[in-house]
Each structure stands twice: as C-alpha cells, then as structure tokens.
Image (cartoon, rainbow, N blue to C red):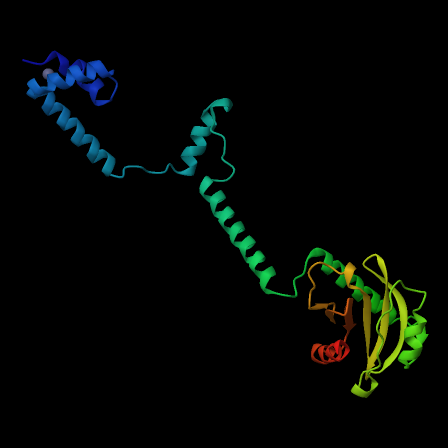
Length: 251
Ligand SMILES: [Zn+2]
C-alpha cells in the first residue's frame, strides 16, 4: 500500500521546503516507513550524481544573443563592466608597481623628490642659458681674489671661491643667478673645452633630502653640501671628471 506522505511530503522534505516542526515529524515518519526512506535515498543519490556529472555547458554566443533579443529591454541582463576577479588582478598589479616604485626611490639616489627634480631642471636650464654668447659670467677673472669680492653686496651670503687651475680646472669667472626662488652665486670653471657651472647658496634653503648625482638632457649634475653651503656642479663634462672636480672643491 502506497504511503500518503510519499507523494505529498517527501518531495518537499527533499527540497528543504518543510518548516522545522514538519521536517522533524517527517524524519520520525522515515524511521517507520521503508518506502519513504528508500525513495529519499534514491533522490539523494540521483542529486549527487547530477551534481558531480559536470553537465554545465556555456551557451554559444549566438543562442545568448537570440535569448537576449527576445527578452523585453528591462529584463535583459546588464553587461558587467569588469569581472571581479580581473579587478583584483589589476589591484595586485598596481600594488606590485607601487611597491617597486617605493623600493626604487629608496635604493636609487638619482630619483629625488619633486622639489629636487625641479631644482635640478632649473639648474640645467640656467647652465644652458649661461652658455649663450655673453651670458657665462658677470665678472671675468681667473683670480679668486677678484671673483669672491665681486659678490659682496650682491648676495646675502659669501660663497667660497677657490681656483683649481693647478689641478686642471681653472676658475674663469662668476655671475649672479637665480635658482629655487632665490639669488645664488654661479662660479664658472673650465675643463679643456667644457664649462662647469657651480651654483652655491646657503644650506638652510637646500631641499630636505639632497640628491647626489643627476643626469638631465645630457648634462651631469653633482650635488653636495659643505661648511653650511649647498653646491651643485653642472656640466657636459663626463661624470668621472666632474666628481673629481667636486671632490677638489670639497677640500
Ligand atoms: Zn511513508
């Protein structure tokens, strides 16, 4: 004889549609009704085999288009701009780039802050301008005792001026220049056919973190500070000789 629960309650129990009280009642019934128990077991077996059968197939694009076209506009699924997983991948790439940039900035002395780079670019522009005819110096002299006093009264500091003619870097003059929103001294030296501008200003207005070496537009810049002054040498001279020159100045 067929159990009346079999058709009525078993499918609902299997689909989890019974409330708690009726679920418990049906479970009590299962203990005494082999038919319901067996049918439930069959249903569970069938469900697990369907789930493991990998029956899912992606609809071909032509079918998807036809279905989409057949739907009223408001019922059509909206395209998703970027899948979540890809967004995450882009975030991971962005994070990796950020880390690389931060590490790179810490490891490479050539990469300075924005302010340093602005000053470096100003210095290169001044250097290039000074190479125009008649712009290299306001005072032309190889004598440091002529060049140094020339700055008196023109600046609010006294730049150190030494001649390095004996070491192959003769002083040839000096001029006033303007870098980083202040007047600076520009000392002009020569190495064979190369001119070297040394920009000097008090250290209290130097950038917080000094770059050491920069190369901009084919010009080498060497920065240093010494005895309360901030220096930048700019030239198209090769970096090795320019560093040799700046080390002589630092003595
Ligand atoms: Zn039953």
